[in-house]
Image: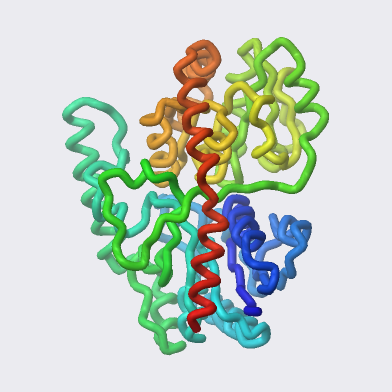
Length: 409
């Protein structure tokens, strides 16, 4: 038996649920322990039956917003001081020793890049393909500038080249990571990509997402990994699904905004549909939504196949993969390059329509949903993608790779 330490960012829903799926797929002889700093989705870990260790220091809400903006490329400012990073690395190293962990599995917890290596443990990262080092290196156009004309294409190539340099070459990582890494005897983390690349990177995507790409050493495809929340479908969902009007799912994950949620709900309110929307965490007291938009808490989206006719999503990997696995065509509004990429991959497969976030409050969103509901091609493509997903199990593949590495030690 070995102890595997899972380190998701616990205010990121997709990371928490992805790590739970991998932990569930481990041989029961192993011991899975989770660590985290913020409490947002830590209860999901406890509810799944796993041991959870709350560490400090945690980020304040304002600091979390700043980290999200850094992750989305909207700012270079972060709350990552030497004291903050040093304290987290010390807490993680102590936990590794206390639990006698044999491996570390991360979502995107950057201090694990220091703590796991300082303790000499193999470090695994279950990751989307978009915005990995090889994806950025090998992509001519990242879709940073939208449009199909020659000027847009040329501008996108220039923007992609700039991103490639900034991401892989420029010393843009917060300086605290360099200094704390050196203090812990680890190679300094200088670039943005150095904060996002483990020793073994488990690429959680379908085969067609890697068409035209070459995986370098340290990268291997495992297949999609998305949440299977252990909860029943709320009665309101089955009730709405039984009505004659189409049912639309509005899923914006944990990285969208109140403004986007309200704008999308307003447009969906103009359609002759019913909407189930787990967006309560974005709303404030006094917010008024259209009568056909039914707000719910977190629901088991993997069980919505056959109940929901179309979806409106923010483009996060978890929500996109769940829609694909359940055969639901969707509108995707990527909020940052990784999410834009996730949506565009599905547009090529024919089961999605891409919009810009600023179109959430415009008639373009309502028009796109009408197309999903009226045109058979989207449903047919969604069914084909669903059948392909049924042949994949990224969590199980990840677990076998981790177990083999631990056994080899």
